[in-house]
Length: 182
Image 1: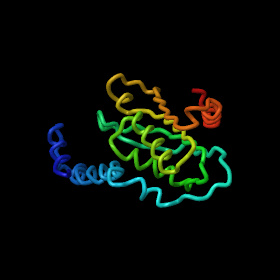
Image 2 (image 1 turned 135 degrees about the vertical axis):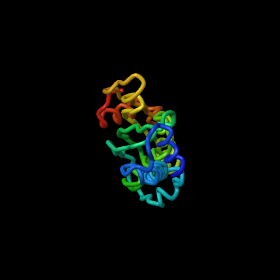
Image 3 (image 1 turned 30 degrees about the vertical axis):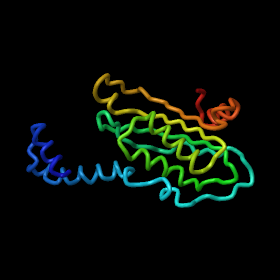
Image 4 (image 1 turned 90 degrees about the vertical axis):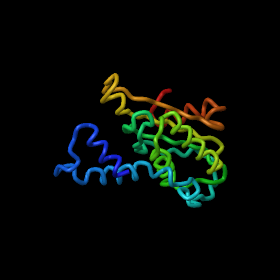
C-alpha cells in the first residue's frame, strides 16, 4: 500500500522524495489501516459478552456517538453522530459496546444508509432487543469540498426494527428524546 501512495504522489505531480513528503506514503498507509480496521473486527468480539440482566424493559438511548467513516464512492470522510435506542428483552448491553459497534461498522468504506442499517441489525440480533432505532446525522466531505460544494448540508438516515417500527408511540418517544422530529 505504501508503494501505491508513493506512486499516487508522483501521478498528481508531486515529488515523493521532497522533505515534507518523504514519509507520507507510510503515514497514509497507517492512516488507512486505522480508518478501515472494521474489516478485521467481528461483532461478537466487539460486544465481548457484555450482556447484563435487566429487570425492566424501559427504553435505553445513547445519543451523539461520534462517527467517522469513508464514503465508498470517493474515499473521502463523512463525519457525524449516531443515536441508538433499544428496548431490552431481559438483557442490556454495556453502554460502551454500542459506541464500539458504531466504530466497527464505520471503520469500513461505507454509504450512510448501509451503515445505519448494519448498526441497527447488529444490535437487534445480538442484544435480542424487542426493538431498535438508529438515526445517523452526518456531513459528507465528498459533497462539501467537491462536486456540488454544499457546505451546510447534512444527511439524516434512520433504521427502525421491532417495536420501533410497529409501534408509532415507541418510535415517536425515541425521536423526541434524541431531539429530532422525523
